[in-house]
Image (tube, rainbow, N blue to C red):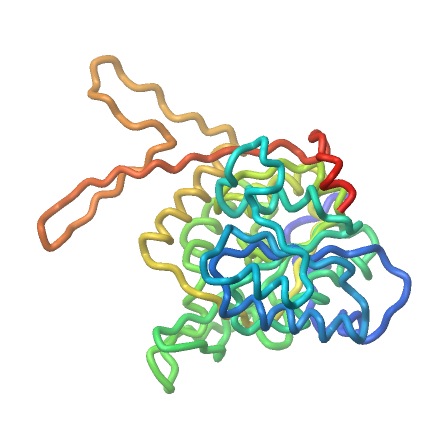
Length: 354
């Protein structure tokens, strides 16, 4: 079935309220695994798991909760384990691939111990995590025939002093749902130096312009880099995963090629507040997103002309900065690996029986 991005936006955009019944009733449904990749999130992992547990007491919606920890030094793993989650070090899963190389690698390795027919990923640093993050993201897979992949959509407030959730985004995402038109109020609020939708800077400045140029079919996704998404396990098992922060945009592109736009959906979760990154961290994330997309469109760096001085390859990121001591050119290694589809792997017996 062919579908324009306009038709898709109208027919495959939902609000979490559409699926609220999932949080209060049981019934026969596919087994569900929730995966939380975690790195130094002792302040948020406990409340997130408590929220999931409260929802599960009423509905039994999630059958398996996995926390894949990056050997955090702040006690993240202990907190998660005390709340009943299955906790693994990202480095103990599929150790033949060596130490885990970032978020995407941890997500890929998590599939080796995921037992659900549907697998959902969620970020573990969200400060206002609600039950609707879970049932909303899962909703289209459970209630809409033909949907195989569901992505979260939300506002990303930014403030220097704390969360702010007022106003509308330039995408027209409002408290009543997703809309292709609508006003924008992104100026400072009267309560302090906040921007209602000033978060998600890598998404707005890097990911969305790239998708408009190379993959216009995906331009209807409000949050193409959202860490909250769900899919049927067999789809994820045949999808390659990039290491690092390029993983989400690469998965979005690969799923489009595999099942097509009509099998994809997004759900308005309202507002989400998680920890904001430094400008340097955003620079690295933007570079990862650009390189991930370049792989999917087969962009090859231009050959170097003979006689030029030694220039860095694509795995090296050069960063020119001005400091109190003068100008400086820094060199950073940023390796981007691609893990093959998990379906092609021989999962160790001790993991497959978990």
